[in-house]
Image 1 (cartoon, rainbow, N blue to C red):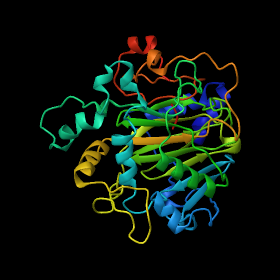
Image 2: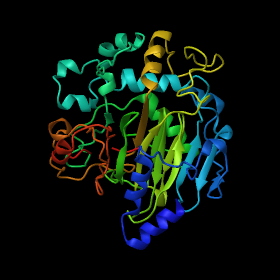
Image 3: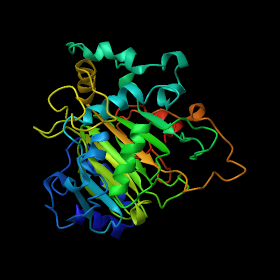
Image 4: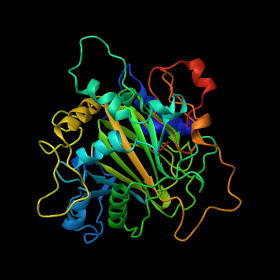
Length: 391
């Protein structure tokens, strides 16, 4: 990959775009030999163990949101990317199932906003889980079945709802941010050196096996001194982290279920993308159910509610070919408000164009948040409907 990136720079072409296409291609499949795998430790000369604040998350505090104490986390930094932190699955056994259930059953509920709101009657998007659960619990039929509404979900916004048309947040479109996700983000941020992190907005991306996430920078938040946190569950993915310009060749890394990425400092405004979803390696769970329904550790109190076997059956069926990514960010600096007069508000469900399905790669060079693109939609439609999220 290094030679390939060098030739791109010499020709003055978009190095990031070409490497994106390299990992996205289906035939022939790409070579993954240069992809960093943090789950294997420091197997690369670019990866270094990182010491986090061992006292930031105690066993008692961590168990509240399903985390092991921070002293036990395996965290890494990446040469050339100061401020980028990769934490390899810091969750307690069984805890991932709670967050998967929340992402599929709770967070798409109203008053939160999702992509389906833009082209479906409101009465049809009230409870996506209830409309889909029975179909997903049933054994797969021999013939191809139509997608449930849950499988058509591509993004959900929380807290300050991102406006896809104006690429802004505003004080006029906000709903309560989930308390348990706020606590999870606060504990991870504190361990990474950002005490007092205030989770104010979230974008959840839902990927199918043929989805990808275009090249973008996340800069709509008004305070870039606060980190951006990314939590992944389900199938694995290739994540590309580049530089401040698209001519900077990106570094490729695997992201597995339970992994956490933190983009802060100089890495907060770097180009990044997800060109490919890949099946989890044999023996690697797509989300650790802990051998059964989740229950809080008996010696500690917990904010995590048990996940029933029925609910987990639905989650497992969904995850068999999908990945969920939750990104959390602080929009405003401490004590700050949105500028007055506020930016003209355009409700995000007016003009957002839902994810496209096409074998042709779609890249938006300067958009902020992107949403996952599926691998099979019309090129004609694609030109008419530019889509806009973050990983």
